[in-house]
Image (cartoon, rainbow, N blue to C red; front, side, top):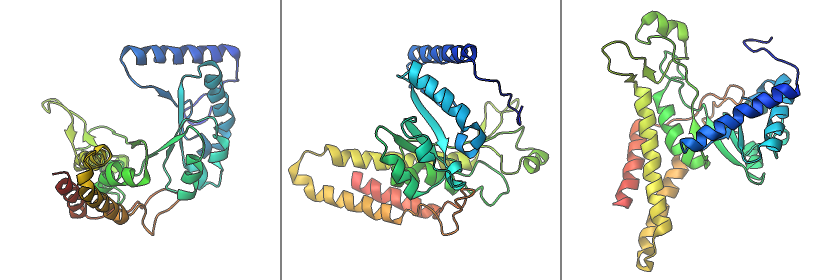
Length: 276
């Protein structure tokens, strides 16, 4: 046993049970028309003693169920000096990174058939921690995802008890939440400023995507001037988006740069003007 896990020796019996479980998930995904990818292990390289076990199950799925797309969260290993791009090359289809290390990301992008997304660059929810800045959620789900070229984005977040309770707020520290849990009479969960910041970030990305699609699909040769102006607006905004601050820590992945909310609103309005 280690932490809250119990480890068992490899066996054909366990392998067959695992395959059966994955096959069941595949059938459910087909039934409900859901895209499915599998992460047999989470952040394995950040826990080096789990790498061999993780590779065993990744290899098992790749051999027995080759149609399944495989992904994993990386970044912690890079922070520890482990060459994750070498360990998982040829195994992962999708890489999620919680560290912004351009040189490492560039190496992953060179691996054929792979895509990369970002995670845990947001606030993690409400708390009294200085890292709990809702603007981190807006930039992560919007302009940061766009500028880094990430193919996906998500944030691990914990929700413990009733966050309106002062004792709970103090005890959970940075493990806050994006919504207040529902209690009788609420009619459902109650969003926080951080939740609304995610909504703002998603909308920022939608504006960008709308303009980019308009540029790509413009067939009118007489509109070349407008296309050039639109590209210049996006280029100007991209230049202003700061991916990481000078205080960024590769070790803990904190200190992602944010600008003021009016800056984001101004960028969105500039994009909207071009769209209109």
